Image (cartoon, rainbow, N blue to C red; front, side, top):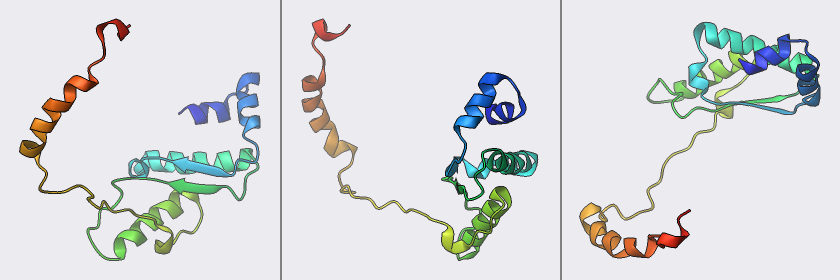
Length: 135
């Protein structure tokens, strides 16, 4: 919303903010999964207007989302994400450009609450601040 206001108002301060972004090289949009329907179309147009207004035809557009996949398995999920990015950012995106991550547990899975609780009780007094240091 604020970016759209900055692009559409002609107050001197707003114009200076946009002018300071001239030649912007990167645009990162978080929560990519929320840009669908009318809101997605609005954001897609906003991205195009921003790129044009800032004179940044080669701006790298990056979308991030922790919950983007709606298809559970196979290469189709990457193709679906690339399709959304292509539509939103107005640049061709392929499944090979979708970067994912996986969680690899590094803690001992047998080290549960019952095992940790006695150690926590013993360690907590060392972390309590002195009364005089709390201001």
